[in-house]
Length: 191
Ligand SMILES: [Fe+2]
Ligand SMILES: [Fe+2]
Image 1: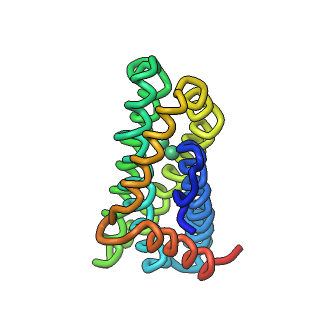
Image 2: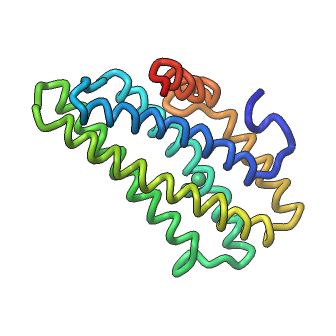
């Protein structure tokens, strides 16, 4: 079952996506700890996690918020500048920077750059911390504000736009394939 196969509230769809992202952050943190304790830098697993974060967290989830949810909230009077939407947008930008740093560090690591593992882990830890806090704010503040200000029609329109976006591919991969990457990482690196 896809996340959008039911007529659930758009905020529920986004919260469910948060749970997939949070599961991947647990694995990323576990792998970062392995690297720091000298048990090995798992290049392939890190590359998988970065691919997931680029395509699922950013191209799919953050884009859904930026292109669909936030404009709907602005239309109901939630300000972009000086309000929660502005903060969320800023944090999306910062998070993209960390993902980019992780990608660059992975490339450098593949060429034998000895400092690349530490740079990767530092960027990963910054990303993990930012995203956990960001998700907590969206789940417990912004989405609740949104559900309070949006009308039933707003919710239905947003729901159908989410479904349209959910049918797209991201980097050539469907949503289900991206969710499978998260599952595979969890299976390969259990706690
Ligand atoms: Fe967000
Ligand atoms: Fe989010």
